[in-house]
Structures are given as C-alpha cells and as structure tokens.
Length: 134
Image 1: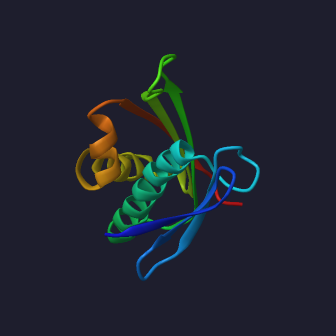
Image 2 (image 1 turned 120 degrees about the horizontal axis):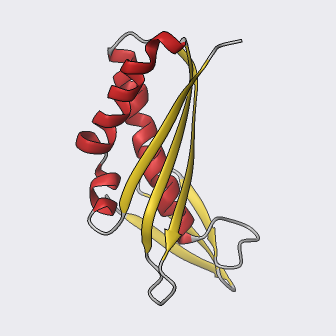
C-alpha cells in the first residue's frame, strides 16, 4: 500500500492512495478531517467492511449500518488515543442480535487490521443496537 500526501497550503493536505481515492486533511479543521480523526474513521471503516461481509455470509438481512466512534486522548504530547468507544447501529430485525454481536466480535478480534494496530496502545470497546426496519 502506498499513499502520497501533498501539501496544498497552510495546514491543508491531500492524501492519494495508489489506484484508489483521495482524502483531504486539514489541521485547522476547515476543509477536511484531522489526521487523527481519519485514523478513527479508518477503524470504523475497516470494521464496517468486515461486519457487512460477515452479516452477508450469515445471510442476515439488514438495510443500514452506522458506527459512531469516540476516542479519549492523553493530555500530554504526543496526544495518543487511550480509550476508543464504537457504537454500531444495525438496521435489522432485533431477532438477529446474536448474529450482529458475533459479526462485530469477529471484526474487532480477528479481521480488522486497524483494530489490531490500535489495540496495541488503546482499549477498544463497543456497544451496539439492532434498529427495527421501518
């Protein structure tokens, strides 16, 4: 994997993945996300991919998945994440609760490489809910 990051101006950067997409980062939080916020988003995105793939393999019907991520940081520099909390909201029949829990557990404990890297320094906890489809 190769990412090329270009300085645009002030604290504005664009990161481009080879053969992939681009993302804007902004240290002033005006035109993009902060680099640490992107790390947290990367955790949620990595886990979301896993959860979708696992639920599909389990033949669980769902119509939505939202993950809200929050992280506490140390007070002193470098300000690293200490505790990370993830909340998953899956739009599916509540009868699928056990399968949703299993999919999240498999993601965070076995498949998500971002979680594996972050877990070396930060506690990762999660909650979830099955939201009844409309």
